[in-house]
Image (tube, rainbow, N blue to C red; front, side, top):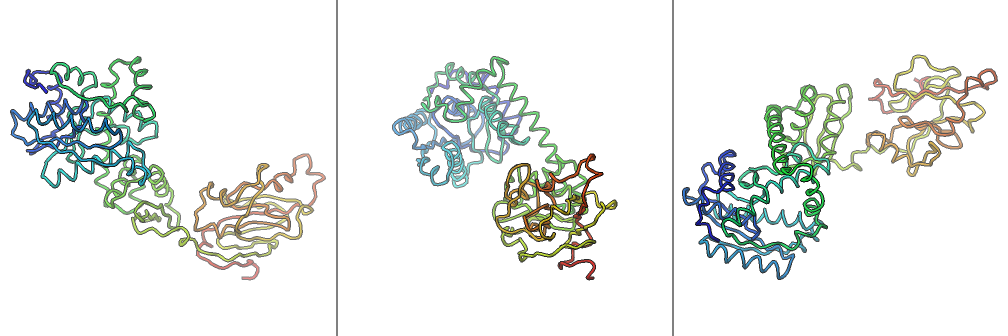
Amino acid sequence: MNCNFPVSRDPAYRVFLSTLLDYDMMRDASSVLIGLSGGADSCSLLCMFIEYSRSHPIKLKAMHVNHMIRAAEAERDEVFCRELCESAGVEFEAVSVDIPDIAQKSKKGLEEAARDERYKIFRTTALKEGFDRISVAHNAQDNAETVIFNMTRGASATGASGIAPVRENIIRPLIRLTKSEITDFCQRHNIRYVIDSTNSDINYTRNFIRHEIFPKLKQLNPNVEKAFSNFSACLCEDNSALLRIAENHVSEGKTDVLRSLEPAVLKRVLILKAAGAGISLSHYQLEKTAELILRTSKDRTVSSVSLPEGKAFFISADRLVIGKDIPAKERVKKEPGITKPLYYGNNTFFEYRISLGTVPRDDADENALIFSIPESEIRGSLFVRNRLPQDTYVCAGMTKKIKKMLCDAGSKIEERGRIPFVCDADGILAVYGLPLSDRVRKNVPSAADKSTQEPLVFVCIEKRAELTERSGIFHDNDK
């Protein structure tokens, strides 16, 4: 490595310096642990820090992680890094980790397992040896590739903002430099580096983006890396501003206050609450919790969203808390198999009122399930029961499992054992919260049939708030 040529006046080094200053990367730092793979990026990073140390008294150490993926080539890289640091007078350490074995045991991809282990080693070494900063060599193209990858997976603002220049004690001073600017820097200063043969393997997602997608984007904009850098910086600023607002509400537990927040702020409050409990929320967990908060203003039940680490968000009309999760099988109230006859007039089944009559109800609740069926089509007599294992339903020409239909309809698992199924001897006619069965649909009389129409039985099923606390099942005429 020849860093004696005036690196200090090199345009790439000036970008390195401005990035250190703009993001305050080296405040109160006197030592840096540098991740050194042997590639152009990390070798440039090492050279720039050597130049930086000439005017700033800092301790440097380079660390290489041998992932044991490429056999002889991986050994070549480790030897190269060791010799490079010896020639530059920089302390060096190499650690070997069997990434293929770790990936198989943890059921992770090679890329993910390698990244996780690499950062784990860096953090452990920095903590053990007292290094203030860990520096890695991500560049502007790495950032753009990360943005593209995250956005194709439906990332939030955090994911779409790309690679953070600073996260905790990890700094990325090359994040504003393009790959070509870095290789040009290496050429100007005679910096040798190795090339990883797997970088051309498009079976790796990042390589596919780099070799298949990125060249087409550069046809649209030759400076696409800079464009993505600007996009990331703007989105990161916006996200940081929203997070600062959310921080003022992290300790808030009243759902009416949380409900009054803008959705973007509410979701960040939930992210911060979960992070405080050591939990990273998935997109589904975040969206579901926010949805339940916004719709529980008049709901007297307690809903929950299961989280990692055996915890859950519990949402009621007045509170949001994180607590110990209760497995679904334990949460469900086991209702015995119940069958009750239905009579003309009002019938009550748990919190539901089921009315039978010869004329339609004109005072039914707007969420009521109302249907009619000719008397001649009723086999035996009508009765109501709750769900049984393996129940199926003929609807829209298909036989479907009712358990799946209730799940798809958003029915709460703890309430499914109390949902009324109106049946006759031939099977299920209607289920509250689901579409009507084909048997009922095909017997709906048309306007032209009214003059010759036979007697109908009108059925109305309503969920009544005043019945929610009752646990019995009875016919209203008996009370």
